[in-house]
Length: 471
Image (cartoon, rainbow, N blue to C red; front, top):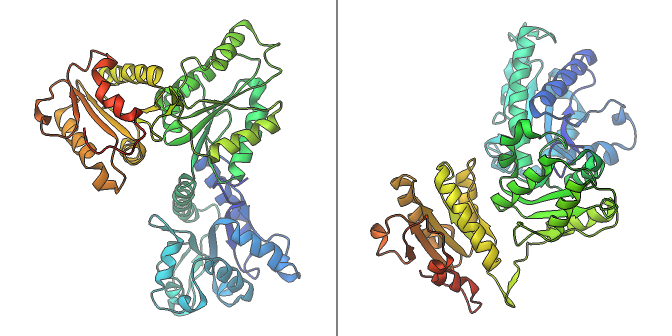
């Protein structure tokens, strides 16, 4: 399974079979091990070790391998330059982004389609130079690493030497950056680290989601535990859903992950193994009963159907690919985007008070309320300002410049992100006086958690007769 979702292979290695096989084999082995250490998982590399080139099934096997690879690496040498097969492999990869006519242009601007951020998906390993330094004119815009010294009388770097290891580190760093960027572009789904009896079911779910093109976090099914609990928030960050598979064994870390998902506003999807209830310990039975009643869980929580893990996986994939539905309140659907409750996540008192407001709003109004993250604040902040129907800006202890910036963001969100008007805006701050002219509802005493004081703000979110543009 590839590290990058949506691909069968992370890397396709193209090289001339006329080159020294031992060098190519050692390079591939060292690169595979180096990438695995950096990424924490075994990468999937396609390499023609079966001499497919000489057979008739080149198109069906090699071409498919190229098109299903996230990145393409060329081992450049004089033999590579004259190899018809290498040219076919390279053209097959490049033609996904550029036509033959475009490739004949000097600047080849179409290659920008091959970029992920600032990094190209084709990397050149220069094993040996071409005559008159002609290799420097071969796709010159692309990143590369030189595994040789000298020019006319050059010397290739031998595997295991310091020079070889230095260039291998450069190659690894570039490819790790590229693969991580490509993985992060996919929608993220958090699959919780389960109790021991549910590991097999979680592994099957992770594999299916990965094959569907989702970025499954964390990378390993047992990667997180209480010793790494501080990493849970970062793994949940920007996930479209968090999936939990619950069986008969009780694991307090599963409960911790569930609470974190609820706190961060990540949509929980929960499957309870039907056979678990009769075998569950008293503590696990209490958890299953509480989860079955959705006690303390966000309004968007869904219990997955299915009498076995295969049916559960089908239900999970279906719900993840569908947009989250907002629950009805007294027969009237709430705003589709929920409420973004902005607070300074680095101020502990503000964070705790904001969570109290959030809990009150979710319990009474059945609205989905989202809080910012400590890590990646800017990305989540922008995402929620684009999607939510209501914004509540909260501040008690946060620095005033932070408040000013976020107040400006709220009042300019429609213009800044070219989104429909927000239906409702409210500032709950210790001193509302600087914002008297802002088109928002103003509420003082942020530590007095009373929903009655938010009634105008909440009332507008219950309306269904169109969007609301003011305060």
